[in-house]
Image 1 (cartoon, rainbow, N blue to C red):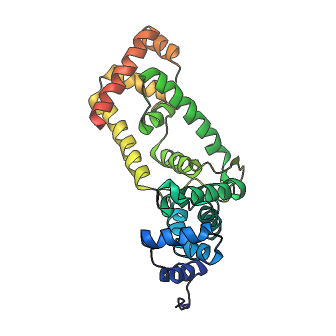
Image 2 (cartoon, rainbow, N blue to C red; image 1 turned 120 degrees about the horizontal axis):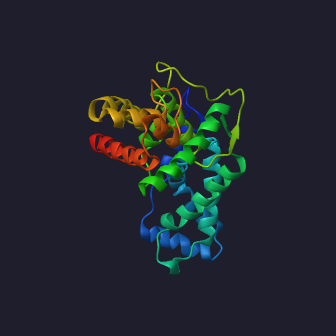
Image 3 (cartoon, rainbow, N blue to C red; image 1 turned 90 degrees about the vertical axis):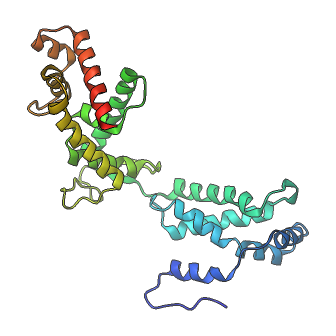
Length: 273
């Protein structure tokens, strides 16, 4: 029996309710239908497809918010499922759901690659992401390990609000959607603390950044705190100062400044962990 349409219900919700009538097949039922498919039985193809439509929904939901509507993802996934059913080979000794998962994901990825809308970023975020990547590479070379996000923010001298904006932008482009610079953005603006819609991870990392600023004053020596503030442009300094210039102002060598820097970061990292 088909699902009854309810007022206010979207087409996708109606579709999801409708396909609930197709229960999961047992291994024996699946094998029998697969043998009929191998003999060219189109009715068996339809039955195998119908009883695996919920698998497409579950996979499509994993790929949502990537620039393509969920309806289009489901449609592409269904095409992948049909292809899987027609190619399914019982000699592989695996269930159809496992085999079809590959073809469904491939079809969905292709849909995203070909039709995803570009992620629009304002010019200041576009530039800041480039600075972020360069800072991460430099920190990884200095620390011989991947840097934490809070360390990268400290190097760039980001305040918590801007830190959150960068994290949002990185999340937005993490799905490999097309990226382009938008001088006058519509879809991404610098939010105020009250207006920002932020992830739990972004909140945690911003809190760590606030803690980092406080720890500089409470846990480091005067020299260590001054060196970090100068190097990373932390108030009262308005912009990062090159190591050689810090060394000159403090009457120390560049290697000594680097050592103070690394020791100070090690202290802060220990307090944050």
